[in-house]
Length: 336
Image 1: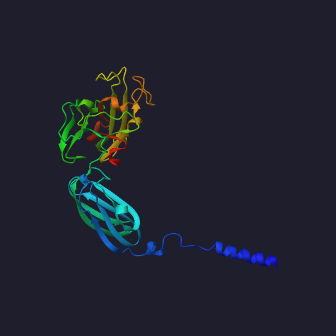
Image 2: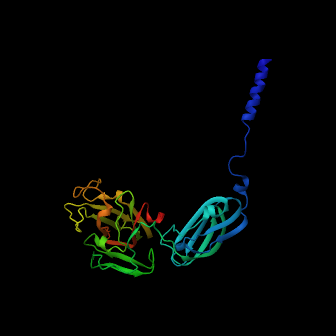
Image 3: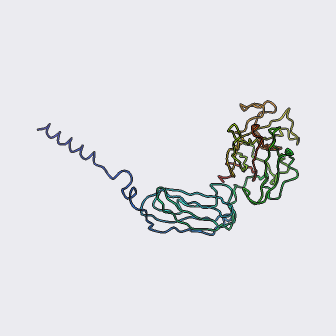
């Protein structure tokens, strides 16, 4: 009798331990139901001045949980901001926009189109908004080297091959209205040209933070991703940082450090390149150790930056336009 009682109790426990508390996974409505708008798309703050810390957010409610995407496109700049999520409600918590950009160039004071679209659904909603003031990037500790809005500083020494072009262009800039155009073909030398940016002639003056882990160099580059006959990128971009370790206002290659950073230009359009100073390589040693100076990365002692545009020798052609050269502290400039 006792064994029978224990068996019944065991079956009772198994039955209740296997009982589900709720339905797991997406509901049938979310999987197969029609997508309907319970509340139509609305824009809160559809005429925002981001320079005054104003913001924009969106509201809508759907009949099911769905993957959604809001794409904001500047009608003049063609800048893009993309906000996405998965929910049946769009509100301030998941759609707040404070003027930042997803795909460069930067937004301008302009009208923008707004597109709300859905994954696996053809439904889409169009709207518009206006930007009355653009977002100011930075946390107050940035130093602007140049944005070329005042033209090309004559104190920025430079050299370009006679067959190559260095020119300030108005319109189509990555930031503001002007940028530095650099391109050309040179079949007798890899070097298309270079520009020196002495620290004494930067647009904003100040001393950089001495901590190389806390300082970022940011530069916008407009690429041409065409390939050479060997199927490699045509353009190579190199940045050199010269440190005046003894602070005598002169760089001595025999006793002071130079740090380098180089990369292929393998994209089209504007892109922000942000480099943490501690990631730079000492020029005399590809493994990171310098022998000319003290081999210590000291951003507060930079006396000059040099940017070089180099061509793939197989094609001789290179193009890399430049805009908005700026130092930031704590994080890359686009994250501020």
